[in-house]
Image 1 (cartoon, rainbow, N blue to C red):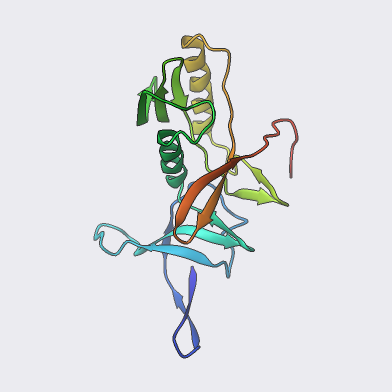
Image 2 (cartoon, rainbow, N blue to C red; image 1 turned 90 degrees about the vertical axis):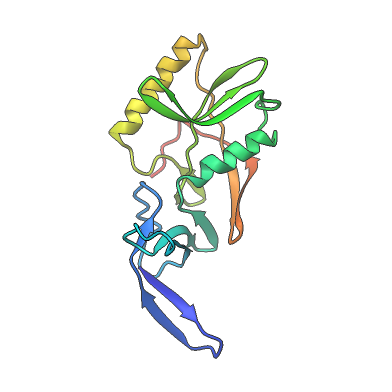
Length: 188
């Protein structure tokens, strides 16, 4: 990884660091030579192999979150603040809950419903279309099958898929507006 730094007298220089990528996806369209990144300094953790983690990366003029745990925190906060339609006034909310052999990102209860929420951050974008997954896995397929079983046990009719845009800035990330989902069109 190359980091570009500029000093006060307008001289540029390169520093080379090894950095941990906080994302298990392929991210091959993001992790390219010369890409500008946002780093988290983790030098206070003496057990780490790398001093830095890549937490965001620029793709053109868009800042893309690379920390796969951040979307979970953003959705959890949005749920607590009643910002997601259909999930207002929850009576119970908990992160990282085990059901069967899987762990789900969020468990929720309200007077009318209860269930699990699985949060997925999207890093793959092509011509303005965000796509998921960028790295299909055997674990992901097992997880989907267990979600189907959870729906059956809860005597529900299916899985609801919601998509929200998020705004990533140098100061943080927050949930924005719902976005359209197309489960039928294949993009390449």
